[in-house]
Image (cartoon, rainbow, N blue to C red; front, side):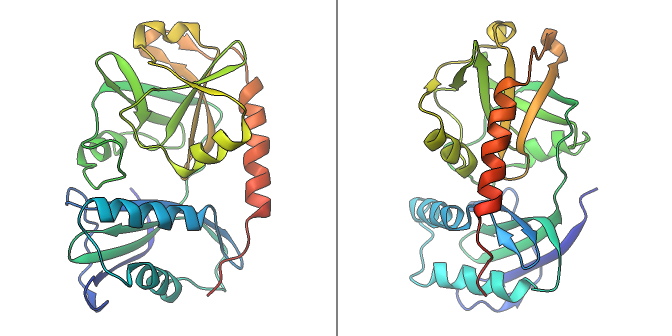
Length: 257
C-alpha cells in the first residue's frame, strides 16, 4: 500500500481547495519529482515544471498564471522542518491541480523486470492514463520489481522509468513510443552517444546490462528478466550512471519558498 504524506486538490481556476482526486484515468498531465533533504531539494525541478506546462498546452489546458500557481501550491504544502525522501506528484486536468507526496522506495540491487504487452495512450506524454500500469504495479514489491512495456515485440519503457540497454559497453534506448523523462535527458547530456534502436524481446539475451532511470528509481540495475532467462552480466555502466546521478543530487540547490 502506498503511504502518502500529503494529498491535496485545488480548483484550477481559483486555487480553492476541493476534495482530493488523484486524477488517474483523466484527460490531463502529471509529473513526478524527487524531493529530499532538509531544507528540501527537488531534483530537476525546473525541467519537470517546464515539461508539464508544455504538455498541458498540447492538451489544450492553459492558464496564464499556471506556472506561478503550481509553485504557489508546492510552497504551501512543503515544510522547511521535514527531512524529505519523497516523490512529489503534480497532476493537472481541465478543472483541478492535485498535489501529493508519497514515500520514495529506493530500488534494491536484486531487481527484476516483468515484460507485459502494453503501450501507454499517447506515450510521448506523461499523461494520466495509467490505470492499467498501476494495476500491475500494485501486485509487485516496487523496491525489487517493475513491469516492462512491450508493443509489437519491442520493449519501450517500464511502468515507472526509461530503459537503457548495454551491449559491449555501448548504450541503447528504444527508438520511439515512450516518454523521455528528465533523468534520461540528463544522462544524454553526459554520455557522448546513446543510440536509438528497436529493442526486440527476442534479442534481449544479447545485452549485458539493463538500467532503469527515472525520478522514482533514480538509477537501478535489472538483475533478471525471468521470462526470457536473461541475467545481467556485469554492473560496469550502472556504476558510471550511479556516479553521475550522485553528482546531480549533490549539486542540486535547495528549494526556494
